[in-house]
Structures are given as C-alpha cells and as structure tokens.
Image (cartoon, rainbow, N blue to C red; front, side, top):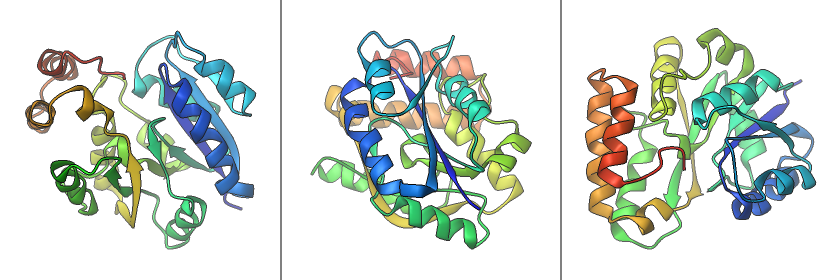
Amino acid sequence: MMNLSVIIPTLNEAENIKELIPFLLKQGGDFINEIIVVDGGSTDSTCQIAASLGARVLISEQKSRAVQMNLGARHATANILYFVHADTRPLGSFATDLQKALIKGYRAGCYRYRFDSESFLLRLNSWFTRFNGLFSGGGDQTLFITRDFFNTLGGYDTNFCLMEDFELVKRIKKQTKFYIIPKTMTVSARKYRENSWLRVQLANLYVFTLFHFGVAPERLKNSYAILLHHDTNS
C-alpha cells in the first residue's frame, strides 16, 4: 500500500503554514501518513501553529534546507516522500496525481508551476518548468520520491545550502527517468516582489552556471547572497 509523508522545511513561515497544512490534510485524505515540519530556528509562531494543526514538528540544529529535509526523511514512516516548500500551493489533486505517477513506475518527479503574479516576465519564467531539462526539479516544483530510492541516493547533499534540489535531481536522472507531472501548481513570487525581476534572474543564472561547472557549494551561497542581499534559507 502506498502512503505519503509530506516534509516541509520552514523558517518563519507562520502565515503560510496556517494555509498549507489544513489544505494538505484535507486534499490528501487517507494517502497522507503524516506531515513533518522541520524548522530551522523560526522566531515566529511557525512551530506552535504547525503542531496545533496536526503536523509533527522537528527542530533542526542547522538552518539549511538540505539538512532539514534529510532530518524529516529520516523520521518519515511512509514509503513515499513529498518535499514541499511552505510558500508553494500544490494542486487539490496532488494525492491522485502522485499515486498515478507511482503506479506508472516513476520513482521521482515534480510539478510544473506558475507564480501568484500576473507579471508577463514571471509567466515566461514559469513556462520553462514544463520541460524536463537542466532547469527542472527546483524546490518550488515540489518533489515526490520513493523513500527507498531517496535512501539509496543518500538524500540531499548537505554541503549544498543552495541548489540542493537541482543537485539531487541531477543524481536522480542518472538512475531513472524523472517525471514532470503535466499539471501546474502555484508558487509565491515574494522573492521577485522583494527584488527586481532582472536582479533575481541574473543571480539565478549566474549561480546556476557556477553550479553546472562544479563550483563549490559555499561559493554558490556567497555569490547569491552578494547579488541579492538575500538569506539563502528563506
């Protein structure tokens, strides 16, 4: 029997968690075994709210999505893992979509997405998420993966505090076919609202290029922070 552990890494996500957890529980039904919120040191009420809504809350010693998501996976009890960022909104059909993909034999995959913005440039950005190429598999697309396969891969590489999702998907693609579910979910455009579109694009492109040339994870983090004046874990 297939069942699902939803793993959500958080850092000061109280408002998003209020919406996301009830939505997942309602739409996931019996398919969801548990929701695990792994917090990286929130100073707001994220942990209290998550616990009150029925999530299992774990506290990570490090503020790092890779570390947080690995911790959640280690405590997961279901045979399918679903990694979801707090500011994303999966589709109401996610439980059925994931089960169909798994029945077809896919061991890992994600969704397309669109931003919660009418900006033409952001619509253009999100259009590329339908393709299973170099830019597929970012954390905002969410990631489903069988627990056995995740463990075989060794989970997320905790050397990466940025691009950890792309690094894992890169390894996934060496082992099996990565599936893009042909449906579109919604992602927050807050990063673009806080910075100019051009600045974010240039920062993403620069760091992505460095990543594909094998540049050390710490340099990726530093480059991104300098370009955006941005906390890489937010």
